[in-house]
Amino acid sequence: AQSVAQPEDQVNVAEGNPLTVKCTYSVSGNPYLFWYVQYPNRGLQFLLKYITGDNLVKGSYGFEAEFNKSQTSFHLKKPSALVSDSALYFCAVANFGNEKLTFGTGTRLTIIP
Amino acid sequence: KAGVTQTPRYLIKTRGQQVTLSCSPISGHRSVSWYQQTPGQGLQFLFEYFSETQRNKGNFPGRFSGRQFSNSRSEMNVSTLELGDSALYLCASSNGQGSSYEQYFGPGTRLTVT
Image (cartoon, rainbow over all chains, first blue to last red; front, side, top):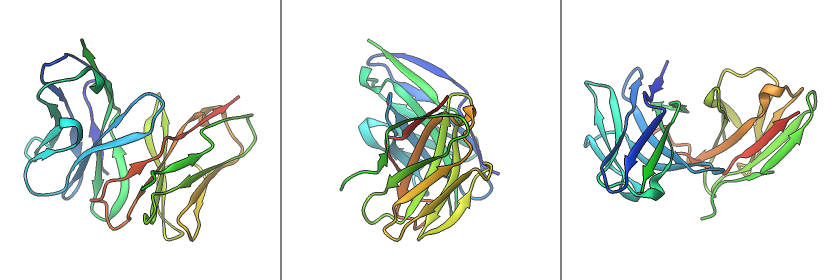
């Protein structure tokens, strides 16, 4: 079975500071890892994915994520936070040949002006 | 390209009734997945359809069913509604060529069961 853990329900960051949203995963075989963002009353919006290759993945809106196989982690990062980054962030994992996404419980990111 | 559309956006039903939700995927996408989002359980996978066939299924009771049409549009049905079925139901589409491809989500249908 595959699973994802987002250990922080809430992360607060001052505007302009770097941000990190944590994610660890468990899956048999090679993981396909994703980050999605959800704004109020909206569906999920794709940010980035790791399939294979470079451990540092760059995505939309200046976000990036670092895949660490030994720590089974896929943390989301951004060098300089914007107030507009405030939203709910979900990490998800999929397995080869299976479209099912297993999501973490989400982390609410609040950027403080 | 137009995004994933879901209708209706909001729905209020009474316990015991049934409901049908609709999802139109991005043009060219053949895979449609459904997810239930609740504050308590988070995002949970319901099922996935590809080329009119259910390809994956989550751990939901048989009251939850779905189908996909030849144009890839999908519907999900919930019969004998319970209060706990109140949730945001999200539909996602992808090209279905493998789990390495990202899924694109619609805005969701907010179902309230009273």
